[in-house]
Structures are given as C-alpha cells and as structure tokens.
Length: 367
Image (cartoon, rainbow, N blue to C red; front, side, top):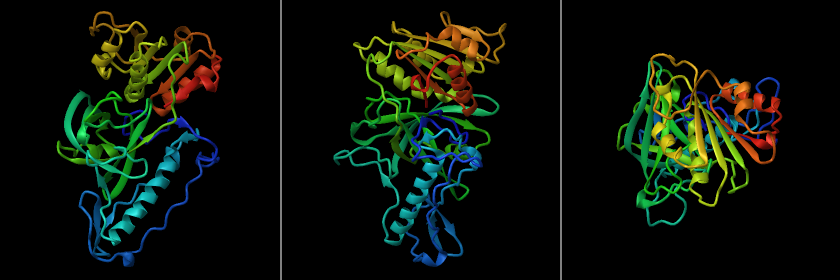
C-alpha cells in the first residue's frame, strides 16, 4: 500500500461481490447509514474532543462524520478493500459510535492491556496507539517524509501477515478521513510498529498528520490485504515500486530473506525522482548483502553530472517502462511473480506493460 496522502488508491483485487464496476463512477456506491438528527442527541456531551466536534444546533458532541470519497477516487479495478467499501465500513462505525455515546460508552478503545488476551488490532474497531517517536527522512518543496513509531503495550507484536496494511483515521475540519498504510517495521517486532508517511503541503490527511506530537494517541484498525506467500513458491519475485510504494516490498523481501530455506531470487526495481528521494536506503543496503536480493534505482529527474551515488549502487537514469521491464524480467511463467506498488498511474502503466510482455494476471499482484 503506497504510504501517501493522495486519494486512497487501491491495492488488491476484489471479487465481484465486493466491487461492481459502473460506467459512470467505476464502482457502485455502498448504501449509506442514516445520519442521526440533532433531536436524537441526549445533550449529555459524553465524548472526548479528539474524536468529536461540537454541533451548536444539538448542544452535543457528535462523532466526526466520515468523508465521502469522490467517484474519481475509485479506480474501477475491483480492489480489496475498495475505497467505497472502506467508506461504507467507516459509516457503520460512525453510526455505532453515535449509539454508544447515547449510552455513555467510550467510542474508541485504547490499545489493549498487555495481560488481556486477544489480538492487538481489530479490523472492525479502532484502537488508539501512543506515538512515541517521529523521524524525518526527506523533505522538498511539496512534501516531507517521516517514520512514525507507535507503542504496543506489553512487548507484543502488531500481528500482521506479510503484505498486509492498516487503516489510519483522523479528524480534519470536522470531517473524518482515512488512509491505508503498510507498516515498515519487521513483522516480528515487539512493543512497537513503524509507519512511513509522506506528508504533503496540501492534503487532507497531511493536515492531520502535521499536528502529531510525541505522546498523542492515534487510531488504527486492521489488518487488511489478500496477499499470500509460500517459501520457494516462485523462482523469481520481481518488485516494481515507486516512492512510498517501497513499504509492502520491504515486508515481502524480509519474509523471503529471513528464511534460510527460501531460495527465491528477489529483484527490486525502484523508481524515484532523484537519488535523495530514495526512501529507507540504509535498509535496502542491508538487504542487498543477501545473495538472493538485488536492487536497481531508476531516477527520472536526477542531474547526471552533479550527484554522487554510493559505491556499488546500480543507477539508471529515466523511467521504468515496458522496455525496462522486458530487459529486467525473466520470461513469463508460473515461476515468476511480479509485485507492483506506486501511484495509481504508475500501477496501471506497469500492469499494462507486463500484460503486453505476456504476463498473465496470475503472475501479477498489485498492492
């Protein structure tokens, strides 16, 4: 899942029951739960300011209503979860929180007590995790990239499987917004999880993330994702990523390289604008020490004369296109899996090029 504040594009393929393509919008809108009337409020104001906003006409704190996606936010590709599916689920949760407020209950659970049985995360309820560290990775005129570390009580694991992502919820201008992110911390990390987020100068979720300070409680739910992997299932796994699309690739690469019995060859083609825009370069350098991992960087806007790459880096100037894929990839077949993650246009271009080269959909997975 590309970790940016662009409209939440899709990732995994859905069954027809989850997303039905229409000519107008690209996807059927899910039914929207009925919005409560001001008269439905008891006037008790039982809610924390971080989760709700005040409505003058009702005299009560209401849960922040989810932001409705635009028709253009859906790519029509049949993704799981589709942005429309997420919106329907957010509206259901919002309605449940409203009902809970009427009964005087808490609307968002804090991260569970370390001695309480059960998973750390829930896919249908938000859990609040304490932000314990902020690390700035890159910055330019339009965006900054950060790694945010969240505390998990009791030295426990987050509980994700390889390739899975989680959903962040925030409140901006009296609206509830959500985005999907793939944690970059190792799956077996205990006591914390790390999320890489690109924060734009203009962007709805970016406005929320820019307010974060160490100690804040931030709401997440999950995990989500349909990707599966079995050791030695493929001879080659080729990862084609752009920008923050590197995040799910790290999970898969660590899964392969961390298993001494897995002899799968992993190749990463990483597209960035400039050398300084390469994210998590130190992590990629460490992975490159493994015999079955290699990476090529494709820089589309780098000044070829005035930059100094690290010795041994495999640098190419230009974009990843069909010609690059033809030269880099082994012949299509059951022993090859190609993973894609980037912007919506990047994903579409890569998938179209792969199919033109003879790769079937069974050999392609888009995060």
